[in-house]
Image 1 (cartoon, rainbow, N blue to C red):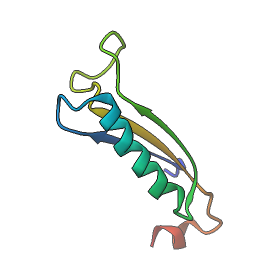
Image 2: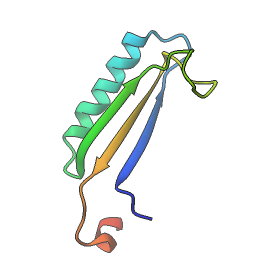
Image 3: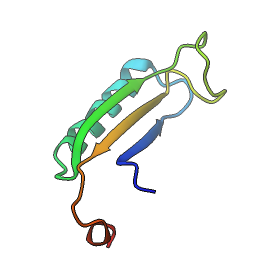
Image 4: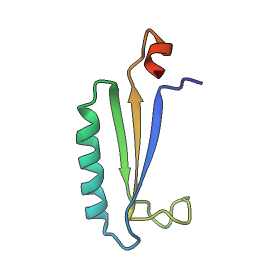
Length: 79
């Protein structure tokens, strides 16, 4: 199934402050922005404990949703 999106989860050591997690996520976004197959990015750093979240998520985790450019030739794109 070709959805055109990738969800990346970044996990730093438990206890890592939100500011440090966000700095790592921003560096990842900068690298991804330079990739020719990436069309857009959306990121979230940290998850408040009062939100619905996985038990291992918190200030030490981040999520990036990566939108990929459409390819005219899916077979070639997968090679």
